[in-house]
Image 1: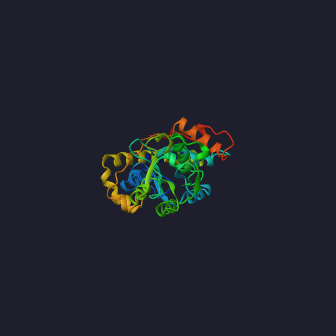
Image 2: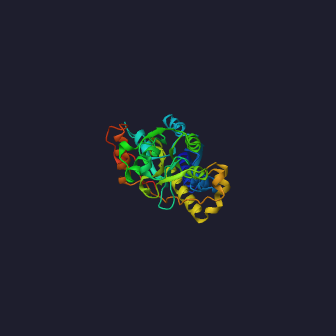
Image 3: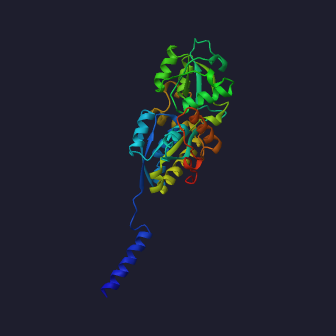
Length: 314
């Protein structure tokens, strides 16, 4: 009789669990975010409750720089991050460690992601004027990659492109404003501040949008152990992108609070379109790989499949 009672109670509790009577705690993710416009959909998802709605707890971890972000990832203190193809390849140069699961932002023919600018009194106005002129960049990042690719497509040869490392964006902006740098590659919308201050647009990626993008990547350990949490994260991002596109004028306060757009350009700034669920193409991946290999930063062959996974997208 006692065994029958235990058996019945086991069935009852199993039924309750299946019907939600015994709730399952949502999985959690920690995602590093840089103070750039690319992460606006994450802040929108947080503010609008899209993460909670999709059953995942997401802690957005603000970081001041890419090196700080990378330290957290290498120490296993975050699950995911905003990054880009070049950095992903550097992470995975010895063995697969992180995987790209979605575009965060892409350049389009209407909205630039990166702009190569000249100082206001430099006399530089077109790509050919940049021959042998040191351009402020950050080494082995999408900034250096887009500098090379944009100028190569504009007709400069590799040995005609000169660069100087200025890793921090505010430093690059200040040196360009002062004229100590004759040219620099800056991301939008920081580049808009430089243009307001008199900098001259030489070339941007609206001409060649395929070279510029940022992505969300997660550690392979997180994808293995928390695939449903990553799927829920991506569903929430998709809802946030749709919300942004439905009313681009609604998010100024949020952008100001999170310091995603400089105050001097916020009032007249038009938000770009954010990409819907998608990942870098094999062609984009192969081009970035060829570039890092040409720099001697990656020696081993790296496959597209080991770095990019679209299967978690909604």
